[in-house]
Image (cartoon, rainbow, N blue to C red):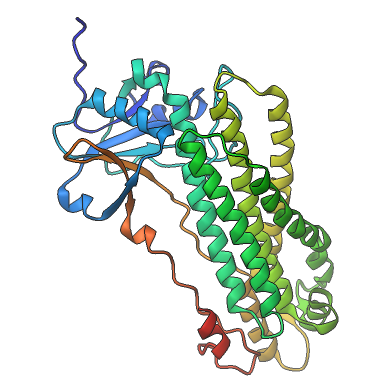
Length: 398
């Protein structure tokens, strides 16, 4: 019988072909992973019981279960070990799982831990057989979590700048976005558990939200550039008139911008779910025609995302002037920049697994990651309000 290979206590599990291309250099391993047909690796390292206590556990979906069983069986560690999925291909959509290869789409991707000296280890045999499906599962799980965080962050920003008149309208729209997001998460959960859910309703809800926001972005494309005078500044009265409409409600524009960013996050998640669903259903199919369609959808999404990012950048860097009061213009400028800024979102998602003392394989989630972020307190009253005092409405929505 062939002798069982001796694996180091900690390492980076990569496909055989990646190791052949890169040799043993940790630097070139990363480059080889990015160009590999299946760009996924698993970092593993021993952990103490105190470290494991920082996580809560959830069941492992069927798509990842068998791959993790084979990984743990092959490594057979003597000590408690944490496994972290590494998805280096961070900016492309799942295109197919088959002879034509796989590309992951996780915005944050993943980085090999700088403090760990990892020895690359080849993954062959039974591990390699389930590697493509494992890559799809890891990617879709990562994007699902990032999209939920991003959506909630933008919606909380909308809630902080709501007025009484607009509350009912935006409560309904926020509900619609969350409903679309929840439908997609449910479909993804079923898909990763080995089912083939009907995605049509979830996809339609996500696309409806996206197209509504796309109309807003197309209408506002290039508007701010036209308002900039020769001195590089914008008269705030003209800005309020152009962006705020007849009521000169500049907060309306800011609310719509954040709703658009949330809709883009949902659309990104929907595209991934659609691609991953067909890839998991028939791993050997290159889906040539579908890939062309998905490419066009990705291009449309990227265009909308670029417009939203440009508008956000312009508003966060805008210089205002106008009226007889320079302090008033500066105060409006500071408030506009603050409310237009994209809320902080932790998109460094990690997919981690652990084998318990009883031999069960579970997914682990850091407790602090699972508690959710608190809404940012931002004053939404008029310029006469105190800078750090939220209005009664803000306190209730927060």
